[in-house]
Image 1 (cartoon, rainbow, N blue to C red):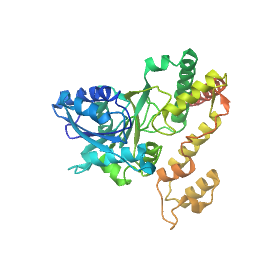
Image 2 (spheres, rainbow, N blue to C red):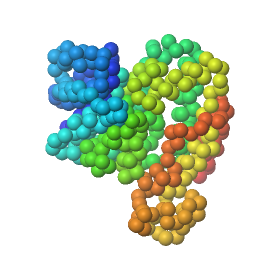
Image 3 (cartoon, rainbow, N blue to C red):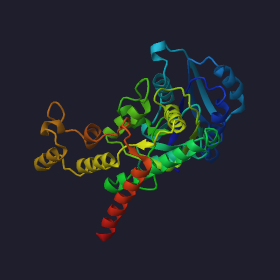
Image 4 (cartoon, rainbow, N blue to C red):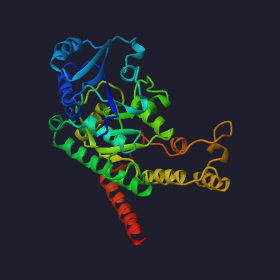
Length: 360
C-alpha cells in the first residue's frame, strides 16, 4: 500500500446512540493505523439526533486516541433533515482544505455499520490498483438476520445467489478490465471510497433526500470514473427493518419479511432485461464515437435518433453518459419472475456464454 494515499472518513448519523461505539471500535483499530501510526480523520455529522448521540460520543472520544474525530451536531430544518444533507456535510467537511486531492481518498459509511478492520487499507489498495471509486460489499448482521426467522434467511440467501448470478451474467456480456471477478455488485453509502479529485470533479455529494449515494456513483461513472467492486472491502450493517433513510436497506428487508409472512412469491427482475441492459452497455462501450458510421450503427441498435447520442449543442458526450442515459441500473425494476425460475434462466445463459468463450 502506498504511503502517498491518505484516507478521510465521513459518516452521517441519525439517532444511532446504541451503535456508535461499535462504529468507533471498527475505525479505531484499522490495519492502516497500525501500519502507519497515523490518526484516522473521521467526521461524524449528527443529523437532528434526540437520543443522546452527542453525549455518547463525548464520553467515547477520549477512549479512541487513534481517531482524529470531528463531530458536527446539526439541526437541519425539517425539509433538509435527511441522510443526503448529513452525508454531504460530512463529506464536504472531511475533504475541506485537502492539500493533495489526487492523493486523498474520501470514504463514507453509515453509523450502524461495522467496517472490517482492513476496510481503509483495502479501499486504498483498490484505488492504487487503478480504481477511481470503490464500492464495498454490504453484509447484514447475521445475528440480527437470524432473529427475523428461517423463512427470511432462506429468502435472503436465494436473493444473494440470484444477485451473484446476475452480476456474473453481466460481466460475461460486458467485461470491465478494472472490475474483473471476483467482485460483488454493491456501491451504496455503507461503503464508498473515491479520490477527492474525482469527487470534486462531479460536484460532490448532492443533498438528496434518499439515494444520494447511488446518485454520486452514477455521476462519477458517467464522467468516466472506473468503479471497482472489491470483495476485500466489506462492511457489516444492521439487519433492522425500521431504518433511518427512505428507500434504504431496512425498507427492502421489511418488504421481504412481509412477503414471507404473507406467503407471497419471491419475485425478481426478469433476466431478459438484465441481459439486454448488459448488451446495450457493451454496444456503447465498443462504439467509436468519433466515427460517423459507428455512431449511425449504434443509433440503429439502440433505436434512438442519432442526435440523442450527442450533447444538446451537438458536441460529443462520453461513454459513461450514454450508458447512464440508455442503459442505466434499474433500481426500481418491477419484479415479475419467481427467483427460482430466474436463477435457472441465468444459469442457462451463463453456461451458453461460457461455452461460446471456450469454443472461441
